[in-house]
Length: 205
Image (tube, rainbow, N blue to C red; front, top):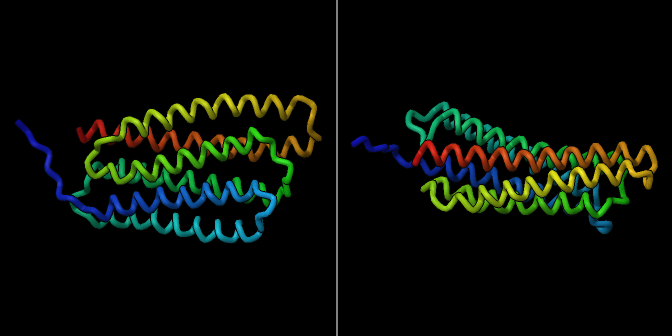
């Protein structure tokens, strides 16, 4: 019988945990952009800092992969997971930037629900990353993120239908459509992260 044995390198798991925490931070700032009392300039400034920190964490993972002889799981999977986490952070940053530069203040309730889904996905992802150490207890996380993504798809279609229903000025439609599409890509990104985690868990089982 063959046994898999890999030395435990906690640094990888710590870095993935940090990447997921960046997403929680970014999702929180996205929610702030929908609060009329928020200083949007300040939120954008803080998001820039958070996005740079997320990039630094992603680079740290790549550097560690390239300098470590034995990794806790497949090198390609480590690269993929790191890049996917960073991609979601970039999309959250992009959405915040668009809300700011487009000067959108009347946000449909359905768009705020998209942000709520992103916050929930970020929280679930942050809770799941430490479980990569044992590859156990991931099924509920994967199932819930996929459920949220399917729900997000339905909401996305409803939002587009509402935007093009004649209640909004043409310019507002264009602005909101860009934001909605960006948020939808972020939700899809969380699903790709969850599916990658599932693939890693299967390989390591």
